Length: 435
Ligand SMILES: [Zn+2]
Image 1 (spheres, rainbow, N blue to C red):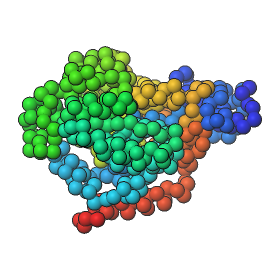
Image 2 (cartoon, protein in one colour):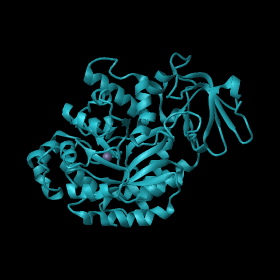
Image 3 (cartoon, rainbow, N blue to C red):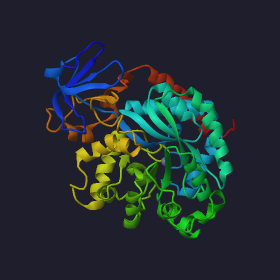
Image 4 (cartoon, rainbow, N blue to C red):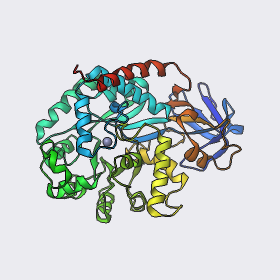
């Protein structure tokens, strides 16, 4: 069945389609157009390439990343937001576009190594877009915009014109008005007029909310780097200006109260939930359960290694699980199956790509990852979903495929070359000498 010419079959102990129940001794058939032809039992579809003690699952969709900061891990760790951002701004000035590309390539590889096949990436320099494409990752790369008036978009148009000709249809561009404290409503409006997929940082910390409401608090000290306070929270301010909508992904939303969650739901704004970043920066725990119960489209995301140690989606799923249960003080606040769904189909829904990716189903792109549990204490199998969520690591990823093409294989040599180039860029970032 479904086994025509040019069909490649992968099979494993378990296949987790996510949008339907786990299949024991499952198989995925991939057509030569890179799309899934069939998902079913290996007895029916054939064993093809067999992975023993392994699980095949949809590639993760990392709904909010910054590939260009792949080597920024630990920079400014433990500082409050003002000095923290100052460290990043100062160091970023020491490198040029080539180093940014080298860093973003490593970021794309790290994503694939962690089973991520699609990113929603916020990019300062456009380097993430070309790096994504070169490494074979799928994604929307949102070019960042900062400023007080429409002229802020000049830089966006320049980068868009430079980057677009280099991209395949696997990578598309969006726009990212950075946040309501670095962009005025005029800039948000100009971004909205582009009618592109959009991501912005919203309601991340209490200090941010305080600054936006009154111009006061710890952010007063570096107000010259920010736009004037909105005199409203980010979510309410954008809602009142008619700037919320289904094209928008809001990263963080830690501070969202019940009324703001209702606004996000009513305007069909998606949320990129970044629990590790929110914890590391001391921002708090986002109201994930309430967002889901309100019907908001939510994806899990790593944010950037400037605020999380890595692009490890397994760690991110666990953080989402632990944070939700800790916040709600009950173990059923988020199930392992829900965490896996948020990291795959949830992210795809957030980026409005769920007709193409996010689950294993006939007709969708063959974006998947193979995870081995050989030699692990998680065998013999009890529940494969729990095994993936509680026991998955990038080291257990055997292969990651995008559109049926293997883009990462454990032990491959590309890793060393890309790491060396990115390491050189990190040395530049850390040096005291200006380029
Ligand atoms: Zn971010």
